[in-house]
Image 1 (cartoon, rainbow, N blue to C red):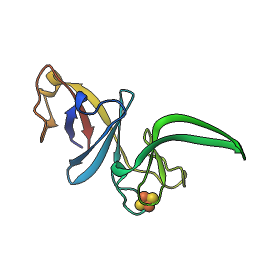
Image 2 (image 1 turned 90 degrees about the vertical axis):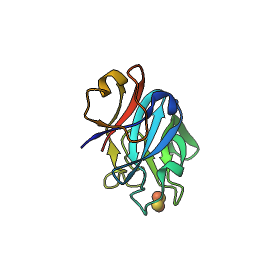
Image 3 (image 1 turned 60 degrees about the vertical axis):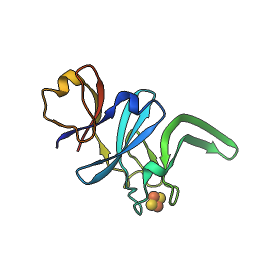
Length: 137
Ligand code: FES
C-alpha cells in the first residue's frame, strides 16, 4: 500500500469531510475534533455514497422513552437507506457482527517528512513547512 497525500490539514477542518479518489477508490476522510478517519465512500449495503450522508451522533436506549445521545458527529448515515456506520471504525449499527464500511489508515505528516518519500501527492502541492493528511491505500 502506498501513502497518498490528500490535503493540507487546514483543508479538512474539524467537523468537515473530504472525498478523495485514490487508486480508483473513492475514500471519504473525516475530521472529528482534530482526529482524522477514512472510510471507503461506497456503502456496503448497496453502494450509496457515504460522503453524501448526514453525520449524526449515537442514540442508545434502555427502554421506551429513555434514551441517551452521545458522540455527536461520529456516526455517518448513508443517504440511500439510512444505514449508519461508526466513523471511527466503519462498524455498521444495522448489523454490527457482519457489516462494516472499509476503513483506511489515515494520519497527519509534516511536509519535511514527505520530502523523503515514498508518498504520492497527486493534486496537493507539498511544502516543507506544511502539515498534510495522508491515507494508506
Ligand atoms: S446503500 Fe447505503 S444503506 Fe443502502
